[in-house]
Amino acid sequence: MLSDPNQRRWLIRVAGSALVLAILFWILPADAIVTALRAIPIWVFLSVFVLFLLAHVGAALKWWLLLNRGLSPLLAIRAHFAGLAANLCLPGAIGGDTVRAGMAQAAMKDGAQVVAGATVDRLIDMVALLTLSCLGLVLTWESAAGGHMIWPVALILLAALAGMVALPRLLPLPWRYVPSLPGKGFAHRLADALAGMGRKPGTLAVAFIASVLIQLLLVLLAWWLALAAGVDVAAGPWIFAWPLAKIIAVLPVSLNGLGLREATLAGFLAPFGASAPAVVAAGLVWQVVLFTAGGFGALVLTMSGMRFSAPANSQKEECK
Image (cartoon, rainbow, N blue to C red; front, side, top):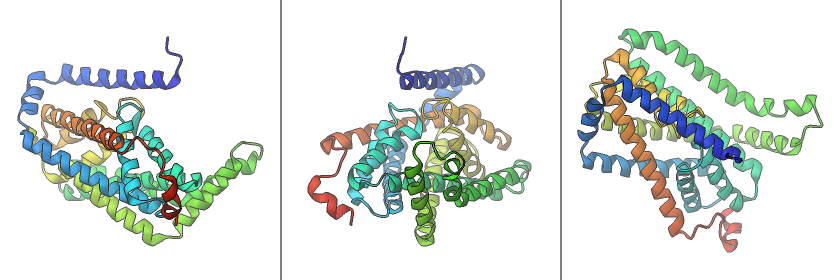
């Protein structure tokens, strides 16, 4: 019997991924998936991996910008890659965000700003992904699938934008009606930090543009793997489907999206004539890229001495 709730949740996610993968390999011809896997040259994988790491350096600097430059850029990059390493054993992106935030908090000593930066960072990434999905649908406007899907995706995008604007005002509401709830002070500090970020439209705009460019690079890298695996699909459908599959893969029912992302992506691309076995094969190789990047993050953390806080003599400079 497992008494630790975190272990139980982790095992549930592992079981979810195993179940989805088993269904995929049962429905789809396994030999076709294996053939598509073998079709991807090793140099393509290595090129994708290196560019993937560079994209995450950019993502770390975007997060650092949203933290109001409250720590050094190098520490932000190290914390970001520590989060990638944590994703190997912690459930989903939230686990990695927790590790990343813990290292930032050790340097900044400002929990409200750290949580606000992480929250806005994730919200901006989601809006960027939905924006790219709408772009993909515009590129496929002439097809029946593109024309029917653009309005639901656009509505979700508008809802996400509205949520970002309303979040600072909605956050303190529970304590207005039930003042005895714990955490009131932190909630108000967090709301103030979020509102303060909202008064910096230039910073938010730069972060959003950076997020769109980073996510677009990741989408195109995944498309490159798919083309190498034999997926015969244009850029438009892929740009539409991949961001949505990435958002759905965040649901806490699989291990970092393993299996769920591949199944969702194959389903979204089916109306565009994409080969499901090749899509699944490309998705599995993408998972290898993710796990390898996590191992690289663990290596970076180990080589830097496994320090989860900034050196004491540099904290004052980092917080200026």
